[in-house]
Image 1 (cartoon, one colour):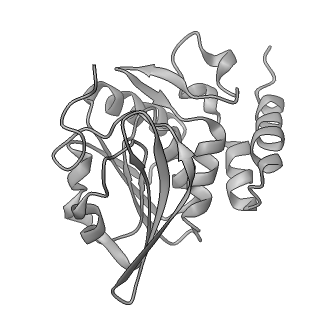
Image 2: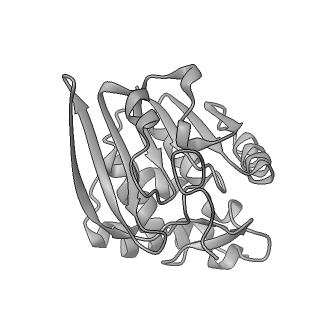
Length: 217
């Protein structure tokens, strides 16, 4: 029988904490959430490796370290309303659900949204709401959001997301080309928007009205 708990411990110790992530709430949550339940059937044994994995529909579940660094950049206290763009497998939403008050997640692909919703409900993570739609225009109905996290690479920061970000608020988004992005941290405070980059990353493209129109062939 696979010792999933030991695999999670190794993942957190060797891939995340060893690279400088020190937010104990993030580390403890990643120790707790069963990542292997969010990957495709037959890929469970690879779930805790130091890499992204395909989840179908040309989408991926992000590398554990990238999940950790993006989550830590949000500086969650447990009281926030968070908007996630790109539900994917639902793993990032699961992490956010334990660190924030409410999570609203937008997924472009209906089959992924359905699967993620089922996995989250099975785990009893009931503070996540998922809608199928164009994530580049956000989810205006429940705005403003204290935090916004985008899990796909965009050519620029969608204006709608800036507008739906609360003041004060933090937005984390990969920005760049389809092949390579910079992880951009955007902070809004007293009407002033400041941003900085946290280093290179590679995500699937953010498709939609205010993102990439089509995937590169």
